[in-house]
Each structure stands twice: as C-alpha cells, then as structure tokens.
Length: 150
Image 1 (spheres, one colour):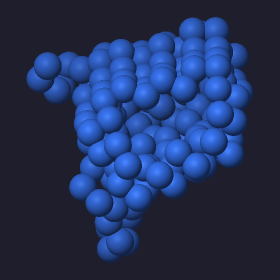
Image 2 (cartoon, helix red, strand yellow):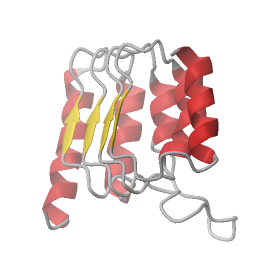
Image 3 (cartoon, helix red, strand yellow):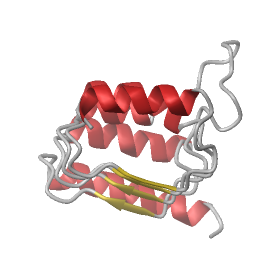
C-alpha cells in the first residue's frame, strides 16, 4: 500500500466511499507518517469504523498525532458529523510501529479529551515507547472506560 496507497484510499474515503466501513486492517502495509497524516481526516469521517489495525507499519508520532488530532477550534469550520473524533472506534492496534513517548502522550491526551470515546482495546506491543509512557496511555484508557457506559 505505502504512503501513496494510503493517500489514494484517503481520497476515495473523502469522496464518500465505504461510509459504513467497520473494520480496516492495514497491517504490514508500508504506511509511514505521511500516509497516516493523509488518511487520518478521512478515517475521522467514518462514524461506523470500529476496528483500525495499523500494526507492523513504519508510522510514528506524527502519524498518531494526526490520527487523534483535536477537533477544530471554536469558530473554525466544523468537519462533517463524526469528522472531529473517531466516534465509533472500539479497537486500535498499533503494535510493531515506531511510536515513541511523544506518540503515547498524544494518545493519552486524546483519551483524556474524549477524542476516542468508544475505545475499549488498544494494543501497543513492541513499540519503542517507554514502559511509563505506555502505562500512561493504558491508564488514560482505563479512566475513559470508567466514565463512559459500555
């Protein structure tokens, strides 16, 4: 797939393709930060998306930051319904990527501010982030699960 394929997929999704997509697994697809940065806005326009698998890709902190970017500031043009957050995402698989403590901080912040309101399962296996950073993400996930009814 690569970054070019991820950009092409983003363009198709942005034009309304696959509006009821529930599961997207792009495992070992050679998607780096540039590909995820291109794909992220389109993914946020898919309210039915429940599972996103990005394992074994060379993506890192910039890609994750784009995926969990905060909604637009007040007064800015709003994205389409569901466009600011990953409203239905329940499972996110990010193992064997290049996410460091910086990316983990972005994930924890996103969980704290409700950008991933339905997330129940997050896998961060074999990434270069520290144990403490991964622990902070999992603690934020546990807190968000406790505040949102299942």
